[in-house]
Every structure is written in C-alpha cells, then in structure tokens.
Image: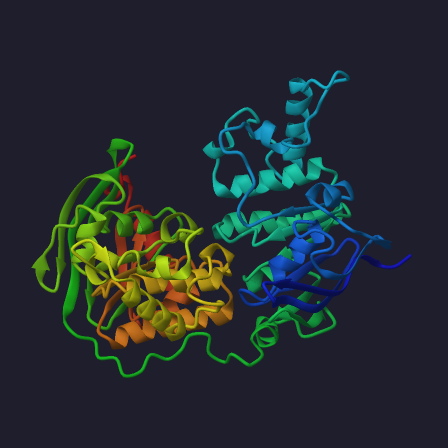
Length: 522
C-alpha cells in the first residue's frame, strides 16, 4: 500500500474563466504534518475546499486519491464520512450554544429513539476536550464566553469527535497570541503522535518550520515544489523565495527621502474606563507625540491596551468616562464620533478587517469610497458616481489590488487584497494621522512588503503614522520610534536605535516590577 494517505493530481479549478488552480499536484504522507504555503490568492484555501467537498466533484478537473481510493466528494458530509475534516479560518461555532453542543453539532449523540442523549453528549464532550488540553473546561458554558484560542481548540475537539484521520487547518493561529499559538501547534504534534495526519495553511513561516514535516508551495495557482524537513533547505528564506519567485534579502523596504517634521499629533493625559464597568480603568495618563513623516510603533503584549487606545481616540469607539486632550496640527480637537475623527483628518485601520473594516458583500469601489463619500464624493447629498469610479480605479492600481475589476465583491478577494482595500478606504479620506492596527495580520510576505511600501509612501507625504503590531520584528523593521504599552500605561519610549525585542521586554518587565501602587485598577 502507498505511503501517501492523500494524492491530489492535476487539480484545475476556474472561477468566471479565471484559473484559481492550474494543474496542482500534492502528496501527503500518512501521519505527517504537511504545510501548504503561498501568497494570498495563490489557491491554498481553494485547493482544500476542493478536497473537502466545499467545491463539489464536477466543478473542478483532476483526481483525488484518499487512502488509495478515488474520491468524488459532493459536500462536506461526504468528506467527513471518510475522516477528512477542515477547520476554516472563520470558526464554525454557534456562539450562544454550549461547548458540549458545539462539539457535537451536526454529529449529535442520540439514543435508540433518535432523541439527543445530553448526559452522553456532555461526557463525550469532556473526553474530546481532554484530548486538546481543555480537560478542566466547563462544557455547559456558552462558547462565546471563551477566548479565541480556546474556541480554536474546541474546533479541533469537534473534529476529533468525528473520528478525524486527516485534519485540515486553515490559518489556525491567525487570531491567536504567541502563547495560544504555541499551545495549538503542540497539540498538532500530539495528534501526529496518535496517527492523525494534518495539513496546515499558514503565513507564519516560523510556525511551519517548527511543526511541519514537509511543505508544498503554491504560486499563482500552480504547484512550485515540495520541500522535506531534514532533506531540503527548510529555512524561512528558502520558503519565501519559492513563494514570491525571488530572493527577499530585506523584508522591510528602506524608507528614503523622508523628512521628519513638527509634531502634528499629540495625546495628553488620556484616561479611559471599560465600556461595561465604569470603575475599571483601562488606560491611565497616556501621553504620546507623532511628528509629520514619522512612523511610531505601539509595542506590547496582547491585552496591554493598544487597540483600546486606538479605538478610544477614533471617535470614542471604545470605553467610557474618557478624558484628556487630542491635538492635531497644534489645535485641540473634539473627537466624540467617528465622523468627528474623519473630519479632523484622523483615520484608523482596525485589526479586524472583516468585522470593522469591510462590507464583505459590497464591491471594491463601494468599500474604498464609503468613508470618504460624505467629504469628497457627494454634494448636497448627491453622490458623484463617476468620481468614485475614477478614484477607486486609481487606488486599485496604485497599491496593486489583484482583482478582476473594482466591481468585484470584496468577500471573494484574498486576505492580503482585502487589507489593501481597507488601506485604500482610509487613504481616500486624506488623513494627516493614520493609526494602523495589526496592518499585516493574516497576509503573506509579498503582500506585507507592499503594505510596508504604502506606509513609506505615506511617510514621504508627511503623514503621521502609528503602527500597532504584535509582531516585534515588524515594529523593529518599520518604525522610527516606539512607545511600549503595558497594563494600560506607557511603560517606555524607544528610539529607532534602541528598538529591539529585548529592550521592549525589558520595558514591560520593569513596568511590572513597579508594584501594585502604579498598576491599573482591577
């Protein structure tokens, strides 16, 4: 019998005459962790949707051999019946149902008469959770009361309950912090020890190097090559070269020709309380300055208060009992609504593009122009559609949004191209100050480089830019200066020369040692 549990041969899939997959071939050995890499839009998720029956047999050409058998899956149920389970980037959990109900949703534990056996459901759910390191979790609580990291593990427990043999994880750590990501990857290694084969799609190359046995690289819908750990060069640089088709000696483009000018954005004594608890202070006496042409980072651990700061500044989108001053171009401004913020030339690119940044069922043009529409594309309440078309087309070409046209639905774009649409949307408002929250989350190295080029271009135009990022190398590679935030306070300020991962952590640790007297109220 073949060593391979899965072979996909000559897979070709078209959408509206455009080949998303062009003669793709992949082989996965039984019991291995096989990574799938490629730029956004390369065809990775499409390939896995073909395998799992999301795109049914007959809508693509080519063969799928699973455990030596030719398979013709017409839907997810067909593939799951064979032990193939896919966990998508957007979790398929029902937020208001309990953990136990979610683990067995669509796979209910029933008695002889077809009635759900709740005692057995809870017992088996506890059993499945133990396999993913959640043995102490209460199976009766609503799943939306848990963090994203635990929800991701519950998805794996759900797959285990379906007697999974081949588990596909699409960007499983995209929304997780480093600690949660490490836990999930270690659980994948534990599943491998129990004979379960995994396919992981990820842009985090350090994770692929840590967890996978082999990696197949796809570029522009074609298979480029498969690298095997211990046999081939398995370094990040080698994988990047295959992904983008060239050497990337510098992942952060050099910022040239930028003159850092006067302070154009200043926050003084900024205090914010939790939106649901008026006694819980989230941000305490924040003071920051950003100059024209300067890129300033907000570094810190997850939950430090960086996003809360950005959202509270952007039209009081977060918090209550907000106090302090905001100055733009030397003048104090009142930013009590999002409209106030945009009017005063402040823009905010959210960390969650799908919830706060985009209308996924709208087209590119609508998404790009909607924030600027009241100020630049309408007169007396009448929208100038021609101006919108011209400007959207200009930005589509300017930052290289890969799409059929500006009329393409945004939800059909890859993550990197969706992010470019969000960036365009706020660039169109012609801000003087731009806050970018996790601007490259969930996108590949090539798309990241293009976003960094946009940041450099904005700096050349004299904009003040603030970057929030959980990836410390990104702060180091893109910022002229950085503030370190910890427990809702400024823990330190670092110059370009001082910004290192060690210095950032030293600031955080020193702030933690200050003692309870200087901490945030609980």
